[in-house]
Length: 79
Image 1 (tube, one colour):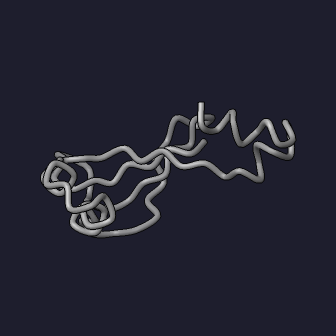
Image 2 (cartoon, helix red, strand yellow):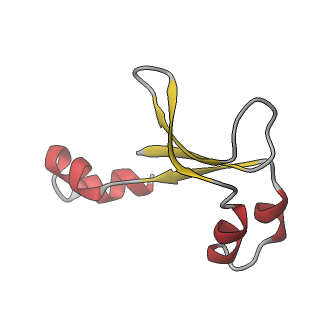
Image 3 (cartoon, one colour):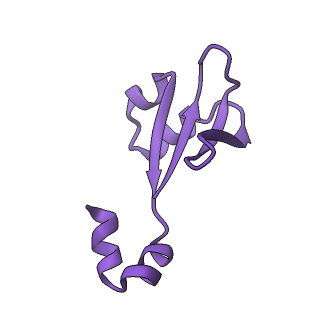
């Protein structure tokens, strides 16, 4: 699993998309600018997404999980 923070209006953190690295407990900016309108559009136009100061996005790379757990890895991601 991967965690991204899509940041809009947050004090002391520039707008953009950040990937969380748990081992370092750090954020890495992967895109600049406020992307909440784009995310809202992808989320079927939900205003709460567009108006939020930050939205956490969870993503999975099935290949990583299935390499370790086989086909069960897909189910583990969904859990």
